[in-house]
Image (cartoon, rainbow, N blue to C red; front, top):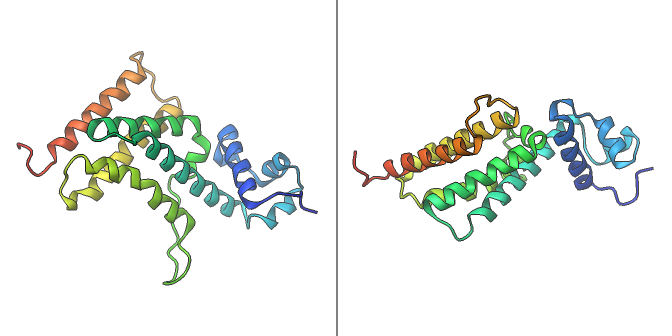
Amino acid sequence: MPRAGLTPAAVVAAGADLADEVGWTDLTLAQVAERVGVRAPSLYKHVASQGDLTRRIAALALTQAGEAIGAAIQGRSGAGALGAAARALRDFVTSHPGRYGTTVGIRTVAGAPGTEPDPVAAAAERGIEPLRAVLRGYDLAPQDEVHALRALRSIFHGFATLESAGAFQYSTDVDESFEWLISLVDHGLRGMAPDAPR
């Protein structure tokens, strides 16, 4: 019998917490079942499979990361918004490496017209909106927006995931390197504006 009050959202939240603890590649349904106090077969009333759980955790992580970035950039623009967004993403990735790890390389599923959007795709689209807001402060040409979005995600995602994996070995302060990176990106974006000197 399923535990009273157990919901798909509670299962996904427990799975996300465990992914942060053990790493998402080592996460099992049996561990999640133990965490929520049910037998593993009972989880299938709430998630369809390990893959379904991973996709749901990815959607949660994308939503949470987007919300963190959105909150950080409130009332800011230009370099201030860029820095706040970058720090918020870095903080989220390093605080939640397991759940964020599920977002890397996960494919979205194209639905038929008129069907519900893929939850991961919908969460990714909502999560990218704060970065679009940051870019509005740089007066980029419309055709450059997608390039800039990809660059921002690649740069700050890359730094944060390397940091969370313990990949930075030099003695130079990592926070200083991150601030240097933010400055580099800010200068680059300002240089890409249509009226910037070339």
